[in-house]
Length: 180
Image 1 (cartoon, rainbow, N blue to C red):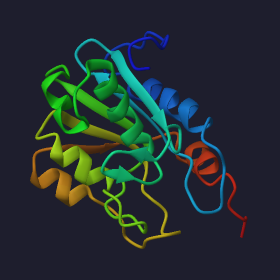
Image 2: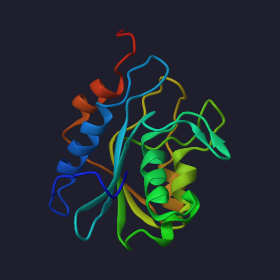
Image 3: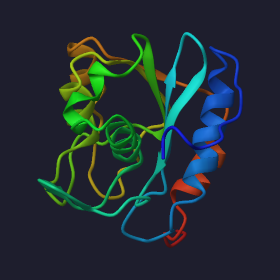
Image 4: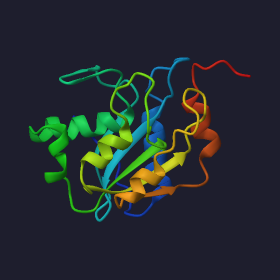
């Protein structure tokens, strides 16, 4: 649950520490050759308060109107929606004014399953998420050139890469994949 988890105290603006925390979440994702192990955390950038966390396939994929495999970012949004008793599309009304998202891998722009992408979910929040801090670009494993950075930036959501953890993030992200 978003409100009952014990989160560490991280200083506002310590992007590397928030990304490390998202990487800790990614390690909880079950490995598999057909997915990436991604972690995310939704943060009040002004206070450093961690609002929710998520990792790939953390929550069941039986959400009304949106079945499928839950991605890390989606899990963050679901937890906020459940905490406040609102629809996921309405969480922008309950989030702090300077909410940011940390995710170990850039949000998906397209999904092979045809389900709603994480970029679409962020855009649907109509500016509630101001910045997306990213650890690595999505590898071309499943969908080539799946970047949604241009789409996010067109609607005023900045995407910023956090340097220094790329090798560790890639190793965790690819858990369950055959090494080449």
